[in-house]
Length: 100
Image (cartoon, rainbow, N blue to C red; front, side, top):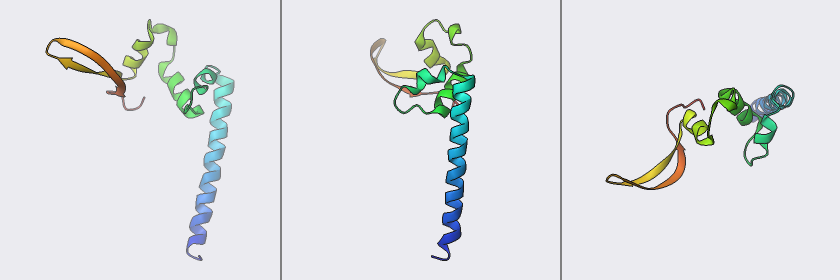
């Protein structure tokens, strides 16, 4: 236990700092980027993800279709192809930009 004590204190301290940063991100999102609130209604979307999405897209009105947003972010649907035919699209996966 004596050897673990300092490590556990460090973990506790880092955990508290992470909570503080999370609260700051939430405040920034609500005050400066209210459009993140809509994204946060989706399951699994936290303030950081919503903020990154909003800041990456900048002006969403420059995209004609929602599929254009996915392409911009490097998200493309996989597809089954046979010769010169596209049979069907599958799940979306990421290609290209790794920072998105």
